[in-house]
Image (cartoon, rainbow, N blue to C red):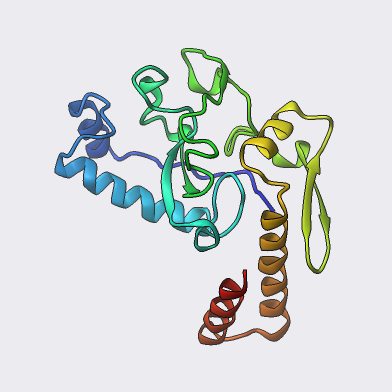
Length: 202
């Protein structure tokens, strides 16, 4: 239900030049940085299926999607990874909120090469999620649990409240909807009406 991401955003030569010119400033207001963020949003929506990289739920269940820095970008944290492809994904507003991840330091041990850093949480790109999470499927709840006594899974479940009743119910609603879609091959219009009703009831 929360899948390992396989397709980070690859910068074009022009975008790489833009990032270099902006001196790695994520908050730069230059036109090329604004255009880059638009392109990244579209990429993540497509390759993540509009699902949060942390909780796996559709953005509209938990707020809008936001481009996320897995290792926080703040000047006191990891500005050097602001534009590292494997550090960028899209998260829902809830997972990225001040009550959950926000500026939480996900890095346990930093390295010069990003992929050699040690992370406290299940990393959206670098970790095989099947080694960290187990799932139990029911009609009203889809429950997550820790696999292989994974400390990363324990921390992710804690930080993102993945085992909360609200999250387990939301996953079941989405799974039931997907099963109905497959069973009846529903049209897009009918799917959208059902999703609106289910969203209203949660």
